[in-house]
Structures are given as structure tokens and as C-alpha cells.
Length: 165
Image 1 (cartoon, rainbow, N blue to C red):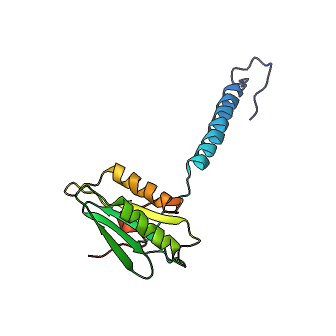
Image 2: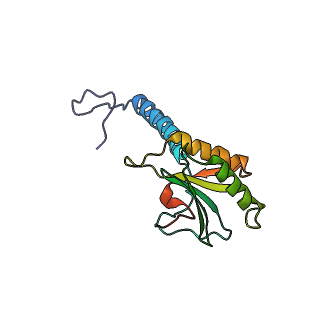
Image 3: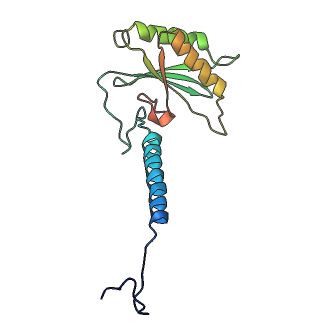
């Protein structure tokens, strides 16, 4: 049944729907949707950590990698895939940065790392055996000085070459 316009019948109702508030609401929601879609895409960072994959297995790399692990009792330098580790013991004055630099320069001169500029550095620090952040920065500076300009910071378990004691 339709409503008759202009009649004096009480059942006839002239209904006009005001769509302006609906259009305002939809334009606000559209703007909000577009802005949040951009934020979602910007906030998505693609991060590929060095060392272990998400499933917990080590990723295979075709070339050996050089790793430096700083502990409170000394420094370990390791080469992955051939399981070669060298321990640089603490001296009475602290870490032996000169010996670390000489060891890294020796590794840089080998055929494995002559054209490689990547190195992994990690610090194993606990409450019982603390390693300061400054020591890790000094290890990174020593690696750059030895000829490895691309230093990657890793957690100790994520190193490609980790000594097993």
C-alpha cells in the first residue's frame, strides 16, 4: 500500500529519509579505513634475524661465517661449518683487544674471509656473569678495525658458530 501525498487521510504519511548524516558517517569511516590501511602496511617490518630460523633450526649458509662471543671470562672467535674456535683469555687489565684484533686480521687474511665483510658479535651477559654494553661496542669497533665493516649483533644462541663447552 502506498501513501497518498496531499490527502487528508490520517493513514497517509509523507516520509522523507534524511541521508545527510548517513553520508557524513560513511565519509568519516572511509577516511578512517584508508588511514588505518596505510598504518598497517607501514608498521609491518620484514625482519630476518641472523642465525636461527623461526622453527628453531639453523639456516644453512653456503659460506662459513665468523662469530665473536663475549663472555665475562674471555672472548671466543668461531668459524661456522668447520667448527674452529679460538679462546682469547682475560688479562689482568681486562679483555685483550689487541689479540682479538690480531685474530680477526688473521681470519680476514684467510681464503674464507678475504672477500667477506660480515661478522656476528654477541655478548653473553647474566646476573652472575655480567658483560657491559661498552665491552660489546669495543668488540664491534675492533671488528671494524680488523676489516669487517658489516657487524651484525646477535643473541648468543643465534650465532652461526657457538662454542660448546
